[in-house]
Amino acid sequence: MHNIDPAKIIAVANQKGGVGKTTTAINLAAGLSELQLSVLLIDLDPQGNATTGVGVQKEEATQTVYDLLVSNAPIDEVIVPTAVENLDIVASTTDLSSADIELISNEKRSFLLRDVLRSVDMTALGYDYVIIDCPPSLNLLTVNAMVAAHSILVPLQSEFFALEGLSQLMITIREVREAANPALRIEGVVMTMHDQRNNLAQQVENDARDVLKDLVFKTVIPRNVRVSEAPSYAQSVLEYDPRSSGSQAYRALAKEFLRRQRDQEGV
Image (cartoon, rainbow, N blue to C red; front, side, top):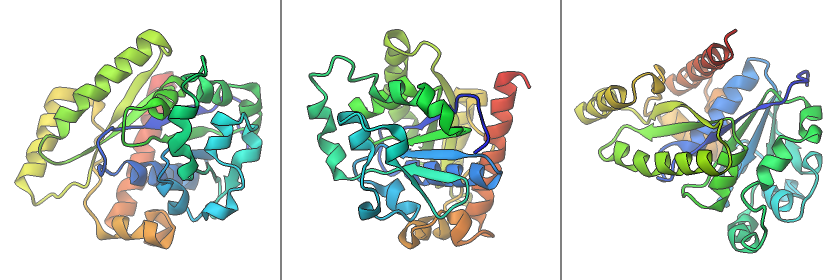
């Protein structure tokens, strides 16, 4: 680890399930780590799919994101290395599903993750990026991610009604800006599970670009069987099949993401 600046924190969020959110979180993290950046992936979804998707078994993680939020465990005690160079994870288990209820009486309940990730202890760990995989709902866990994050990355499936679900997400982002994180911005929207031969998918992409303009990444993630298979082998698609169209797309996304970051910083 080599970075002494605070890590950039990106929340991958969409309250709609099945849009490639966890897949995007895992493969963007893997793509950035392949570019020699030091990345921490935080699995904030009680289903724990990002955890198993990078090859970490639940029993390997003696402490999880639940301990981080509910029991105030130190950040360095909950980080688990993955088999991918430069990529670590804070794992999740089903324990996390009760966190909403357990934290309801905590006055700082929306700021718990922010207090950890923006702390001196975290900076000392030297990560370049923290990628948070949010649950598929706009609950307290997702709000914690948005309050902690510098920006939100939104995966959008190329299907009918895709844009309709975005309006609720945008309202939540606006509320978080007003109440807790005024600097929060939208990193961009990534079109996922895109079938080039499907007229509807093409129409959804065109609509998204018309409405959201430059917020939509140029890189489009294709519907690709290798991307779907990779999690069952506990790997990112970049490891599972480095030459597949899915791997190439996620590599391109990581590079475009970095370009945007540099533009944002005026580098």
